[in-house]
Image (cartoon, rainbow, N blue to C red; front, top):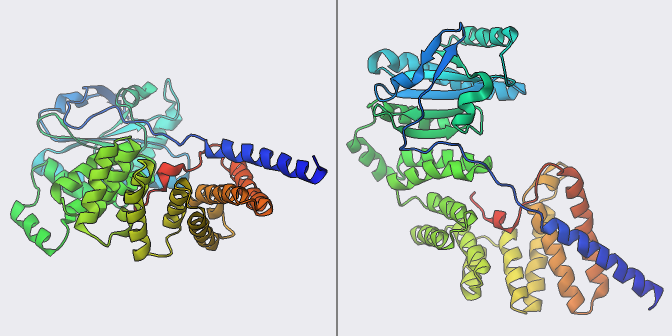
Amino acid sequence: MEAGTYLYWRKLVQTVVLISIILSMPSASSALIGLKEGEAPNKFTLHDLNGAPVDVGGFFGRKPVIIVFWGLPISKSFLDYSMDELRFLNDQYELHHDATGLEIFGIYTPENDGEVPVGEIDRVKNLVKVNRLKFPVLIDSGFMIFREYGVIALPSTVMIDKGGKIKYIYPSFPLAAQPLFTEEIKGLIGLAQASAEKETEKKKGPDSHSVRLYNYALQMYKKGLPEQALSPLKKSIELDAEFPPSHNLMGIILWKQSNFEGAIGEFNKAVTLDKTYVLAHFNYGVLQFEGEKYPDAERHLKEALSLDSGMAEAHYVLGLLYKKMSREEEAVRELGAALAIFEKRKTASAYEIYAPYAFHRISTLYALSELYRKKGETGKALDVLQQAAQLALGLEIKTEKGNLHRSRDLMLYE
């Protein structure tokens, strides 16, 4: 074998192995909070900041109760995020406590297991004083309730109705949650809007409460908490079954849960409600592609591209589809179009390294290299494969604690 040929194949093998390893990296998973809506929460007693016991469980089944888990910051932004909710809930407490009996308890999660130092208690007391919090703040020494309730994010909120059943569970508190929380609290204490008012809103467009629930679910999904997005998303669809984005997002989550048929139904509902909903057409096409229903996949992907010809993701999946169907020329054309659009998205910032499309740029280059090699164009094959390797090495170095986005993460929601 000639030296040049040997060197080429050696480089090719090394690069293929590298790309194969990176493309097979597992995707991230998320844990679940250890509570379910509709169930009765476990009762508990904790001590307040002065050491006095407070029987929180004694209020269950007697009054509407809100429990919010929070902790001191690991960064200033984290503190602000937690305090935003505490201040918001304090306003709700002052507004509704005397009139409706609403009880709110701030469950402080200490910095460490074991006995809580006096200095740490003093810091909490100071925060309570500065922010003029009126509701009780209790200390969860040893993370007892934190672990028992299965909390996965701070802050996290549990709303319990007058019957003693969990009505809502919300991890985190994005800005989009404030109007939603206001409405949920009204429902919790019996001050929800009259159904006639809701019907009036509905006639003007999508149900406003449904949209707020969808926005909250979307925030949870973006944070990598698809399971936590399900509850508000289901409520969104119950309130307004004709809002296409809710069905689109539900389809994505169901697919990630390996519920293929459920996802098919949701995407079909989304495109039926809005035939111009490009994201749902694309997601439907991706799903059909994975299910090896190539004609249906091609139809929906082409429909997506007819609505948005600059959608790199649609060109990319269509190229992979043609590659599977041994339609090499069409595959090269679509993958080339995808790569050109992906390249235009590049910036000098970290976005190029961490954005979801980075994985698909690697995959596009890798697929093109296989097609060029099959056509006997070894020079082009090696060139694009080396580009893929360079990008993959950068990702490998800069995402030590994370995972690349896999094909299932290609689906689009906005």
